[in-house]
Length: 454
Image (cartoon, rainbow, N blue to C red; front, top):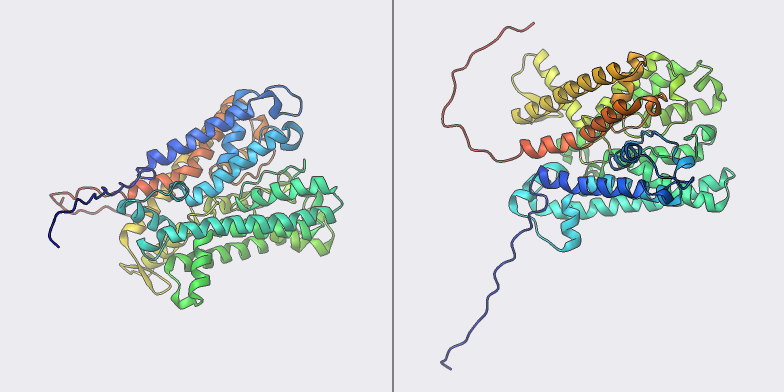
């Protein structure tokens, strides 16, 4: 039958601009930080009913959003249930939001990602292809929520078994599960986990949650799906190998260095020293929980922990630092140079030259900022150089371990540590986003020259 038919074709919905660059990422977290600071400044956010000074509220909100754990007031004594709930919400946003990023928002809103967005997220998450990127993001969210729920159930039972009332165990277990998985280090016990140093059923679940968060979902999901070391990509191999090496090295060193220290491991029964040494080998790279008084460990141990905090956890995880993958690539580059090779290889794979330069840029930028902030904090406080360096690195590594000087650093010191936390949390992500931006190629090539080394 002949005739005419009018068809209406809808224009395709354009991809949302959310997540298109570092400015959108930073503006989103800045908004959350502002709201969190405002809520923590309210009188009913404290146990006393008096308003918290704006700088202290801003410091706490920053520490929670950056999943750091440094505090200028005692979390349990100062904040009310409402205040602790705000801190926990900031921790969850800062941890899960950082892992899933703007892609989580798009998933919730039903939005779409442009090709460039998907490419950048693929680099960030390590998805095999761009088509699998959003699938990975969904799995990241389910991975995080699953660990948090199971961890909460275990810790609720653990605190109850330790003799805490059920109502307190319920809140403590839930709070600590989210804080541990997100590598935040915030605690509501009043004295961290020192009282539970002889209770492995309390501290070891914390360690497992911290490890699960610091490894990130992608390496675990990739390993689970491929089920063979040979089939794993280089990123997953580096994360597993370097993390395992650092964990073993930390355990052996802390056990050996602090075994006879009567202020730390030496004060514990021999049967529990290895438990605590293992726990303390997990926490320095990522989370600020402690079953020992960090202010009483030996200076050499303090310096060793500083190095672990500098490295941190895996990219795309809840941990901070330069990341274990970056550290592994730098080690591979050094080994290749010493052997006279022009190509950098690791685990039988060749590493692109661009990745080497990006890793160097991240490491050197971290060192530069660490140097500047340490000098600034030393100029504004009277603490020892090692304690000052430790505090700055704890902020930049978003770890939260402290020798006890954070509440005493003064106004200028708090601002310096806030800068350190913000840079340590968002600096690497912004650098990666900016380094993966497409730029116009140069139309000319400069002449090559060399310099003297050594």
